[in-house]
Image (cartoon, rainbow, N blue to C red; front, side, top):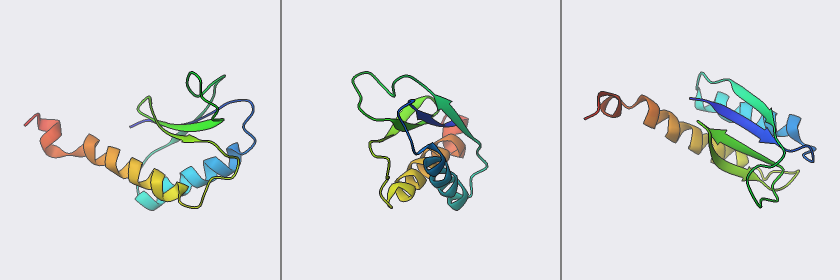
Length: 95
């Protein structure tokens, strides 16, 4: 599973966002590395300066330089849900 913190040049809170994302991964107990990717835009017509992609899919946009405290909780839910999808024995067997 690939996890990316993507950000635009306008984003001033990359270190804080990366710390928060690392906390979410650690709290979930997942063996994941986080890639930090600079881009010109998060998606077309977006005003966000940062976002999180899981396996190439944008799952969360960060619209503020001060993410709310529930950011870690939301990311934890996204990560653990996606991890379950990737590691579900029935899904892997194709049943």
